[in-house]
Length: 100
Image (cartoon, rainbow, N blue to C red; front, side):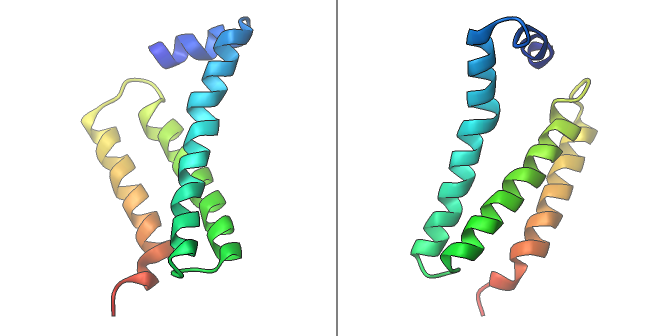
């Protein structure tokens, strides 16, 4: 309910719009990118790959958040579906990095 109110209110209130954008998009993006920058810094992947991976993960995980967690009533089935799909995506894209 709160997300729905913020979504509506951000269309009419610049302060809410700034907070909405910051906490729903900008800050999560920074966190995602810092994770992949760290992987690059550790030599796990090169800088270009890390940048692209960060963008890909941010985009896909954000879509899953809206699809399962912020869309209608939050249920245990939706939480489970989110976790399963996110895990599947992560394993598909980073599974090759498992310790040998």
